[in-house]
Image: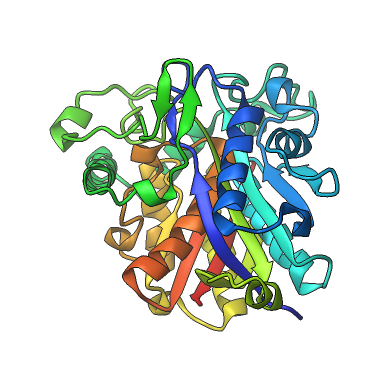
Length: 378
């Protein structure tokens, strides 16, 4: 089977939904921008691309009509390049990466754009008309419709305190603020032109966040609970894209890969504790790559909620301090369909930037799933 390599990665700035600098940008335009950036930087003839695969958690409204195809056309790619939109909720764009890598492995193409898009301004969480099965009981409906309650369930089950959650959240903000100030995020951001000017920085980062400040916030999802707006990821607008090619394609086109896709997996878990999803997915992906968690040099785990990350780290025997060295979703934001490709692209970029052999990208998924991907430095 052919190996798949991550050659490049770009994302839009991630900005707060409703009030952020990208709230007025159509999601198909936002996705087209990152596609154009990745293809343009590669110097490739875009006709050599097989497909554009985009993840989107709520593909309706301005995110409908197979947004991958729409964004491909808006980006000016040739009519010959396909477009497919995939949905695994929060894991949608990591699923897109896995599909591209799988297609390369089976000889069904040599070059793909895989990424994702979510405008949580244009299409609200859960979409415009959610209709869970009427036979489901209240607990199962809540597990699908209210992710915050699933985080509270993990806090209870694992005995993770409010202080521990806030401490983790403050550290994420500190790392992201330092990375932003040092210019370490600039390499991954494709600026977006808007009527109000060019947007080239993330808008969710809150430098100077302290545990004391976070401690003043009220629980959002449950009376007497511990999950707050400060230790959760914010509603966010953003898009991401990776360029994934075969080894032979990279050689023929003089492309310098960042990392090789070494293993990937998905898993299921109880919907009411969906945040624990990365555990089994990570174990499977590591086993398929022939390594253990101790071999990982870079770990990018989505921070849907601080409590969820801490629970996963406990089960995987990973020090939370090893995660997300430039900050995670609590600080950067979590545009649902775009996050997975950000995690993969960031892990690949960090292996190249900072050194190391193996990286992991993983995340939990609403409804009770996990997804993970292991990279090996090229």
